Length: 124
Image (cartoon, rainbow, N blue to C red; front, side, top):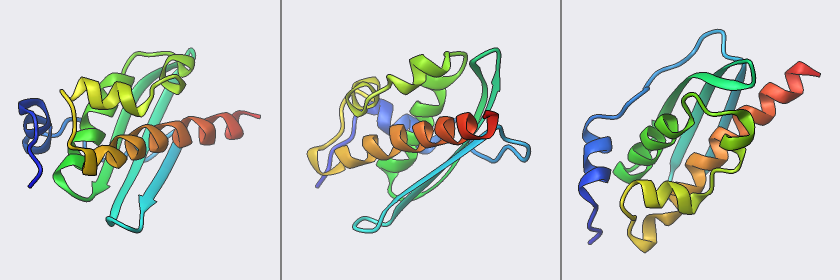
């Protein structure tokens, strides 16, 4: 049985920034067929900073908590700061994740990075 930190449980029960940005500057989607988790991140960028971020996640409690904390960690940061965000940063911000749920922290960072890559491709 997995034991979650209070912070994981708080973000699972009360996730922040859930939703979709209809006119998003970038969209990133990732999925893990093994566990069934799917995450989509939407971002708005202004002056190289994340001005708004929303997500839609289908998955376990850890996946939802990861999406929520990743969205909070991205707000107001520069593109470069967000691209430097790692799965270890995400897990640490949540007070740790059980070993069998660490892949969720990868998914959250990966989905956000893909949204930024999508934004950069559209700017060219």
